[in-house]
Amino acid sequence: MACHTSNMGVMALELFDPMAVEVTNTSGIVGGESYPKFSVIEYEFPERTTVMFKPGVKLPPCKLTWYDGQQYPPKRAVCRVKSERRAA
Image 1 (tube, rainbow, N blue to C red):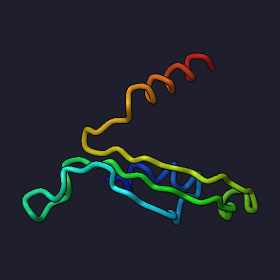
Image 2: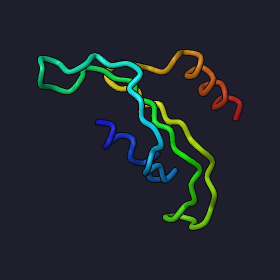
Image 3: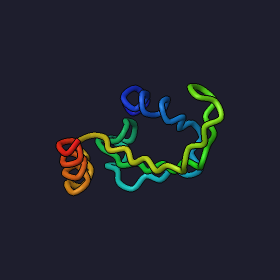
Image 4: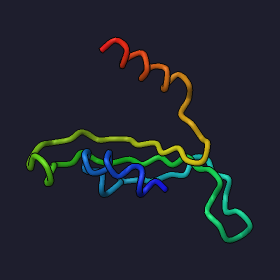
């Protein structure tokens, strides 16, 4: 489902060609023929120059960690984001 739910962030940050992709956790293939019940996948993107929205803008390297199927980010990461939103 990542292709549908992550589209907005991928397009906005122009995350098209990862340098590396690593599955860090997964339930594996279910019953020998189905997608995994859960997975955690890390993508690393290089520095890139925008071409879509503001052509020529340099964007820094980016690491994206995708959590799927009742796998969640560590609580410390979620709590940090919530506290930053309250402070704004």
